[in-house]
Amino acid sequence: MIETPPPGVPVPPVGPWQQSTVVGIRSETPKTKTFRLRLDEPMAYLPGQHVVVRLTAPDGYTASRSYSLASPPNGSQEIELTVERLDDGEVSGFLHDELAVQDRLEVRGPIGQWFVWQGDVPALLIGGGSGVVPLMSMLRFARSRGQSDLLQLVASVRSPADLYYATELPGPETTVLYTREAPDGWPRHAGRIVAGDLDEVMLRARRVYVCGSTGFADAVTSLLEDGGVSADRIRVERFGASG
Image 1 (tube, rainbow, N blue to C red):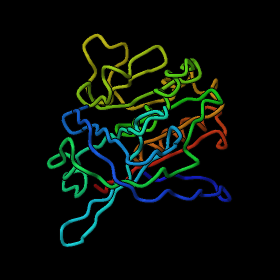
Image 2 (image 1 turned 60 degrees about the vertical axis):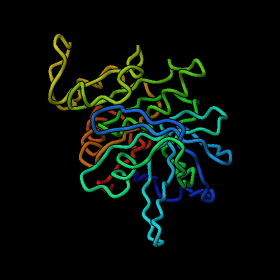
Image 3 (image 1 turned 180 degrees about the vertical axis):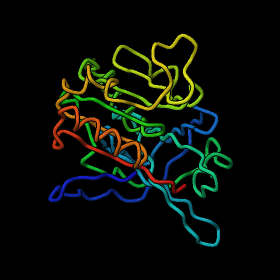
């Protein structure tokens, strides 16, 4: 994940590498799995932050990737990472095809200070595809504290099969927009996100978090600014294609 903080925002130190144990794996979509890890040492973090996962081969070769935290801060030593399996993805392919419960995994974090929500202001969360992962941490955090009225989450996905957290995400504070295939009887036709999808919610939020591909993030940011949301209220995180 790539944050885009403004110049002058300090970058906090990152914690050391530590080991974790895989304690659960579940499928979210045909190409996505959530990995539950129990850390050897406690790690305090905020909704919206991410960690780095590092793999080390027997010959010493290493590969690492950043993954957003999907779990909310709750004082537990367990965290959840939701990972999409990318074509030819070196790390995501291993996690999906080889990693098993009770395996050990090296992680470092938390990372990121700009794209975080601390439950302090009303916020609009807009995620495209896997960009919903850090936003789900925020939503779970708000729900656990009885503050879900502070958030509105808009998730843009291609089809029902591509919706992350399909049994948990829906609620009065969430809206799902399908871009290619909508369920039968869905109140909105399939199509890309447009200004009308945000009119009722964007001006009420003191802060807006946008997460997705570069194209998605740029398009949504333009919609927000055209709709009267000032740039200083918008926080953006983009993801690349590295796997």
